[in-house]
Image (cartoon, rainbow, N blue to C red; front, side, top):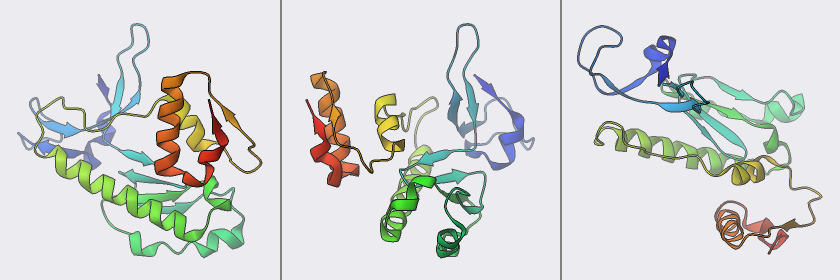
Length: 181
């Protein structure tokens, strides 16, 4: 793996050996930022991102921001200063434009709980443990697509259909009736 040393100041160390920024034997929490391709090793970062439908929680960047694609009047309504802290930041995504403010805040709370759970679990896990894995690309694509005007989602694979239904039941129950086998 390749780890860019610029990410060291914000890295979450689970086991620190020396006084230097990064020493042999140090253990830290990382996220894969680029998968391995042919002969290139994967790239990892200490700046963790937890992505939701409406928001992204960012470790390593503690700023609170709102997508510039959301009209200024609506952007100004997002007063999220209660989430300002020195450990993580929040970015409200363009998808939040059509969502109720309460749904965005609930998702931010869920992302915050997930962040707390991951950072807490990391401290007691052995080195090279996987704390969280990315969902399949088709779930990520569904998370990022605008559902307004969507009439139907047809799936021709039973296993994928079950996974999509499970995702919709948990994350978007209001759109579950769009999914058909």
